[in-house]
Length: 352
Image (cartoon, rainbow, N blue to C red; front, side, top):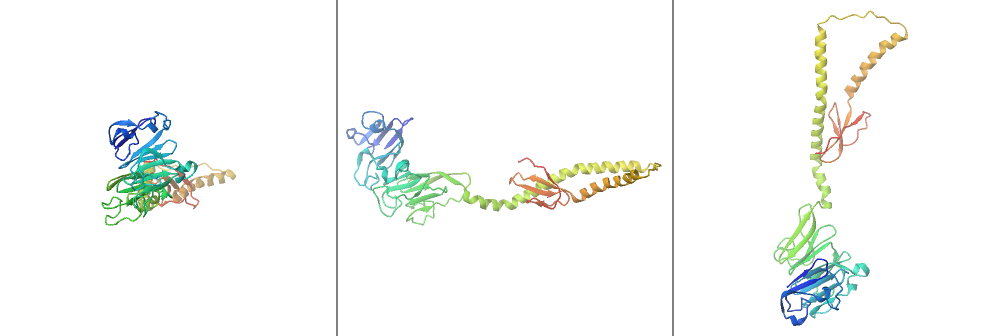
């Protein structure tokens, strides 16, 4: 059978097999409904709770779940394994409300997700996973006819005829049920007797999962937080090598103007070498003479001292986003800020 919810949550239509009352419509329509018909409780028609709005509708093998916008859960259809969650195994031909106190009090008792399997049902209320119906398929060793205690915290759920999956708070996929064809995502030879974590090797986080008969599909996105640290440690050496290469290229680019200036000075000296030196006949005495003698020597020594010591250049590594420092003379690179007293010049390179 099938069900459809129209935009605006105003009308819900069902059609198909109605042998167990899973369509939730009048019995006089027969066991087969060939055209979509409205469900009176969620159609806005009549007096039978017509003011309710349906937020989600989900079909199992012979069951249907209607989740109202208020968080109330209604179910109908086959109840041979207690999959309707009503405390018995009697079939229902009309949508019947499940006691919200089974899920919690207040807003915690409002169901937010629902998924129907063949003989079991899953629901999420207050961020917790509830399951009921056939044994093992409901995540327990025994069958249950009511939601019972929550099994785990869950973000997303999916149920099928053979197994179920849900996404926990760490974005891992947890599966339970049969594993005849490896549908749980573990070693095919392992028979599951409870919940197991699917082997998703990619360092990604799962945001959606869907279960079919004997197979599962998961959608992955982004980086899983628990593997980020390991990836950073693994790439640290490569990042340092890249930073050294960038520093060498920058240093080479800075030395080009200095080499051009040195070549120009050498050429000028060669031109003046053929000229006869001119002796100065100016004489000065007194304090002014002492100043005249010491000033030129001081001006010459300062550049030589600065040139020998060099400076530290701070450069932003475009790959890791971390600043590093390199010495203009020794070409030494450091990740930590130098404390040897030499000047530090910031020259951030644009990220690539």
